[in-house]
Length: 79
Image 1 (cartoon, rainbow, N blue to C red):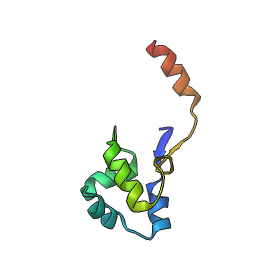
Image 2: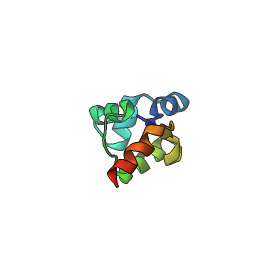
Image 3: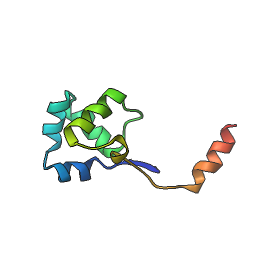
């Protein structure tokens, strides 16, 4: 998938564990694990805001985009 999460790097930078972050933002460890693995289909802005507060980052730092030319082909098929 061309959009991926970079949460592992931010956790390493902050020195926090996923368990600590989940507790601080009021999310389950399972939910945070799904986000880390990229297996969620969406994320609430309120969850992003809490992650940014705890990890001292911007929303764009939580996600990365790896271009995939196939995305353009599938987008034109949708029209």
